Image 1 (cartoon, chains in turn red, brown):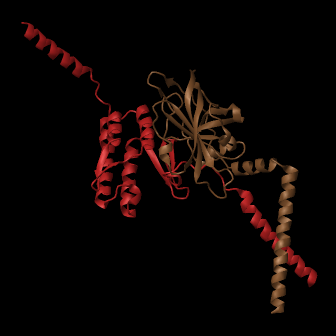
Image 2 (spheres, chains in turn red, blue; image 1 turned 60 degrees about the horizontal axis):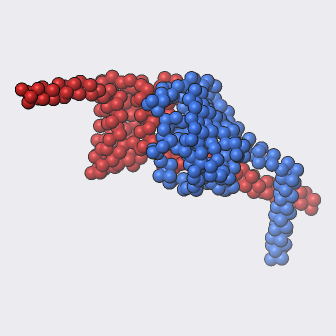
Image 3 (spheres, chains in turn cyan, yellow; image 1 turned 120 degrees about the vertical axis):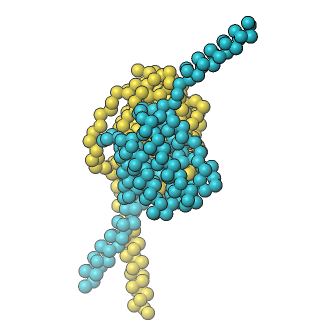
Length: 180
Length: 210
């Protein structure tokens, strides 16, 4: 009798725990997926840096996704991983133009699934992500892999040689006029 | 031959006279206008035509239990102020770290967290006068205050470091306790872009949620 009671209690406990464990939302599933490692070109690789994951976490924690949206975005990520794997590279920056364009296309499709727009500015070397008209993020490729540049070229050092050259030219011109 | 030598001598004398002219001119400007020259240079560097519409700060609230903001400011908007009383610094704080933002105040990396979220906060600003030129003179124990619409946060400096610009391990994304990393380019008088950063590390010592 005691044994039966213990087993029954155990079953009830397990069932209760199972129903109270909250299933991950699609947004959480996506975050867990992108923060994992992927086998690319024989290496275990993380697709995003820690900094990029924080940005993704911030977005996904404040936006809901449907299961279909999660699966569609996941498909684009799988496709990107396949492209990198076939090319034998572990960084998108090492892809040839043709493959890079395919990845850009995947990124565009994933963004559109989430209702986002990705803009590439070749002149400014930036990638910007918009949610409608709201700017979510701008990444400068000039600041990739380094702490942001926060100085400006010291114009005094640039101006002085230019002023000197102009002064020389003026002086030479004056001398020529005087000696003419 | 003699003619060529004469020409070379004449050219050298022209250059010397011209350089003397430049030094006298620059020296006079420095003596007459003094510190206003560096302020003028800072202002020239700050000039940008802001084609973006002025974005109003929206109300932000923090979930103190989850230690996460309930909504985030739009990238590129001012959401607070950063003050360092000991250095006479009082600058607007923006979310984002583009050149346009750094012309206006202190930028905050999107690859970090916000004040009150209990993790790494990474901020940076220009090393010119009116921005963080004096940051390298900050003392251990100095207080850096961040005032936002959702709370006031005070951080105490416990370390400073000069790091190479690619040494991202010195600016970790995660910290065991809330840490503010505020940096600027180093040295301040480099010709061309600096390859190092002067970084201050501060821990949260006081927070007051609004």
